[in-house]
Image 1 (cartoon, one colour):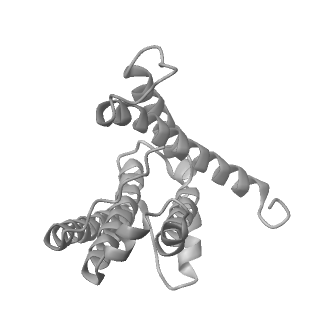
Image 2 (cartoon, helix red, strand yellow):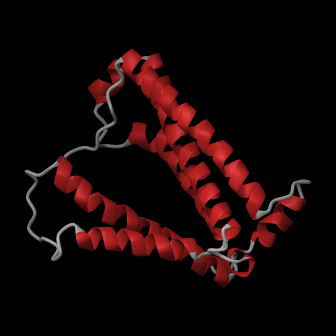
Length: 201
């Protein structure tokens, strides 16, 4: 990869991906303790629920210190990865429940799609709004956030971006995502679509 991508960009992408995985795992620990208290746990983290919360907060803090372009690349790859999973991996996995998939109606499949698209749009809007507000409020600086990099890139398409524009657009995208997510959840209830559950191993 280093032959095709500048090492600085590659390092930032590796950092944000690793930190995001760390945050997800840190959040998953207390969630799984609450949702599956009966699960066998051969190892317990000292400090109980405090350590996962501190881990998630420190990971988020480090993620927010990365440039806006790193976040844009991360969000694009996250979206592409989720869409590949949704349209290919989810249906071709060896763990898929074939009888449930065969019983799923077109309306249920659409409700599930609306829900996942709503979740992706909501996450993207939230990330854009938070990054914009952090710079607008002076928590991060232009030197750290590097909005000018994104502005230069968007300039080729005749568009313009600043932190102030980003927080407004981010809130609009967040609102659209919440509406899509709500529509998807209502459609799932109406069609009786089961919640996508992870297989228990």
